Length: 227
Image (cartoon, rainbow, N blue to C red; front, side):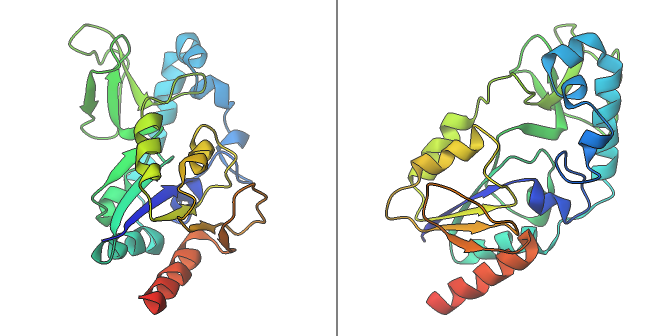
């Protein structure tokens, strides 16, 4: 089976009703991003940060995977599908995708604030002040914040190097280091970009200028005719 690697971003989750930071009416209009998604914000006001991610987890329980997520699962019948996602939700997994790499962490997990290798699945949606890891430190969201290293970026680059088909969906290629993964796509590998906006890039790609669900449906139909 050909290896199909997908880089997914906020656009695919937005169609399930998850707010993004960048869209009009998004989270940037409610929160200062550096107050809730940076080590400095955590040091300044842990309760605000905990509340923010508790809200995100609570909302996540109320939404469902959409057609875009489900099409990626259906593609596993024809391809070895590997998903690299910038999203911290679990909608890919809930749809049934088997191989998902979360570049920016996972909303449903928490970790020690003194040992990044101590990671736990959170039972429920609420993380409280006073919830401690086994080393006695406050548990924090298992999220890669601004200013922190992206520990899985090298693993993602290795996945991209082996791609035979590469899809970018729901991201405008402005978020680094994830956008830099295109540099690792083999020269013989076709790239499909699914995004409703015009995108300028140094890379050659087939642009399906639609939102994620419609664009992935068009990609799926295109692939079926090529089989």
